Amino acid sequence: MKKASRAPWSALAALAALVTLLPGCGEDNDDLENALLEARQSPIAFVSDRDGARRIYLMDEDGSRQRPLSDPPQGGDTHPAWSPDGRRIAFVSYRDHATYGEIYVMDADGENERNLTNSPGSHDTHPAWSPDGSSIAFASDRDYGPRTPDIYALNADRR
Image 1 (cartoon, one colour):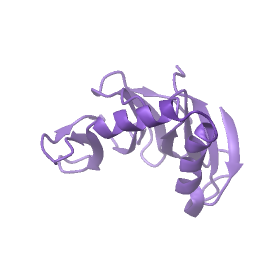
Image 2 (spheres, helix red, strand yellow):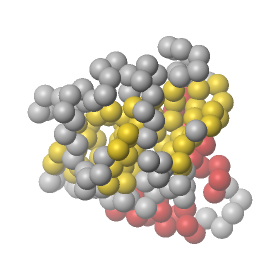
Image 3 (tube, rainbow, N blue to C red):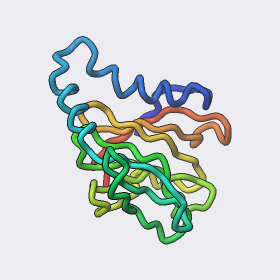
């Protein structure tokens, strides 16, 4: 896992988006355009606590067929982010530590959930996929402590 840069929380979302888009700049963007088209055809992932804990749900573009996807045994799940190919979702889970988020990934059907960061005592949040789906950028306070996050990247297939 590599540290990308030091940034304040207010700039975090913009930087995470920039990290995911830069590799496609100046190249043939057909793959990126196809990935974005596929992602647009995927169901919408959102977070709700309607059943108690915060869970990730899916729904069709018209709002129909709302259904739960994640079911954390404790804590909650937030910040879903579709992979470019629409086959996986990265998300933040508080199931391992009530106050510290971990970056998880699961298949689009909710199966094969796994913790990618496994960093007790650090808050990992705001996952964003690279255009080719090989890595995930995220924010973490692991090196400098609370309220001083950095942006990190990791291999999306990390076991």
